[in-house]
Length: 301
Length: 333
Image 1: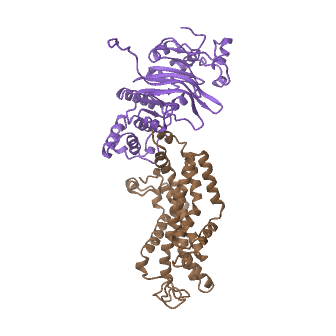
Image 2 (image 1 turned 90 degrees about the horizontal axis):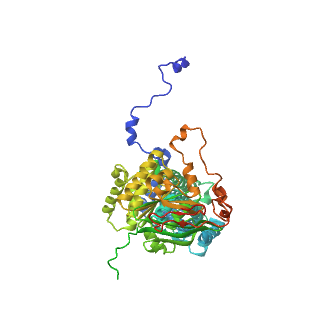
Image 3 (image 1 turned 180 degrees about the vertical axis):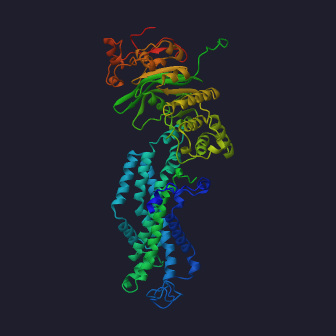
């Protein structure tokens, strides 16, 4: 019977397209904007930034101070919604204040890496020859040293503080950006529009900054978002190893502190870990979608 | 003092290329070519692929590939030798004194900048104008090259434009600063046949309107006959014949030029069963030839042709306007 209905000429197999599409199309968002994952990512990252920005308002005072009885489970006492650790420090305050350090280290280290990497890559890729050779050797030198090892060595030499951590992670992370920028510049410098720009009398800085860099930027920006995520993870790793700034709470240090009680009070490790996972995941989602957003052909502008 | 002797009516060349040589490591691609372009006139440089005509055009502004270099000769523009002038001075001439239109309109515009920004950039590079004046000038230019609705088009990106429209934008950028010489390197090769005529028409109109001289690089003899004043035929890195277009098409003298014209497809080609005429052999045979590069393919070649390259003999002293030069020992005028 059902077959009969499906085959009956009065029932169209494909639902007719609503007539309204042509009218609403003008106002519809570009395809990438309709992706729910993008919005979830943006929402998570935005709330992380809001928490970081208003940490002092939400939880005034030092998150390292004892706030109540030790080892309260989440939900047990509503004045400590995420519970307390072995020293009675409020975990919620720790996570909110930790967002500050984690995000700042991630973003600043990525910016430093971006600056160094783009400069080195652009010069190597554009000029080629001897400049390229020297800069590529330099990049390879940094690449042969494991990132975390280099960061640990730098921190071991200096006094662990947030600026030094930023510096160390930035110094260790630029080779990836440099290689990417270099390859982009090497192919783009041969482009016809670069030749045309030379023919119009533009100087080298203008060709690099205005003709080639904007074309290389989408790729670089996407890679930088990965760099932010890596920076957050590296900082977490350092804090876990007690190499972070001892005067600052970060997500990594919270995990490190909770490690000894992993079998009994696992929430001390799991909750800051969840914060890291969600933030890094949302940055990666946004970075992934940025490829489409930054393409002028995708109709954003 | 002979103040009262009238000055001879000599045409004034905008650009003089004297014995220009361009070399790649291990080979010479342009083997000493000489020509001049008179103010306001169109000079066509024709020849088959690989004969060095584009390389000649690029070497005028020293826009050579990294491995190539000018190994001899002079390019005189405005009393300066562009082959040796400083990079800074050269950049001032590029785009302002001499402009260039490339072959590929689809890739010659920066895909991430708006059309308006790209044309404005040229004006900003070479002239000091306020923001609003620059915008005004860009709109005028877009209108001048025949882009409809410039106000709306200003903020669009190259991918919103068709090939012909992009070439018009390229032309707008090239003429933005009123150059005295426009080098057009096969400007219509990548375009539809219907658009080709429009673009050539536009170039010709602008040449007159802005009183520019034009160097047209092409292999389309029809375009040469229609749009150029003088023509130079290149073969394997040398100019083999140079003449005014009228003279040339009436009676080409060099065997290669005769072959070229003879092999162009006539109106009746579609209605005859006969084979099309061709020049025997290929340009590859010019490699390593001690004598005339065309000798291996030349129907008139005699043994002496293979010993030394023939000199370019000029049959009228007035090289720029009416002179006729031919590099062939078998031709006499």
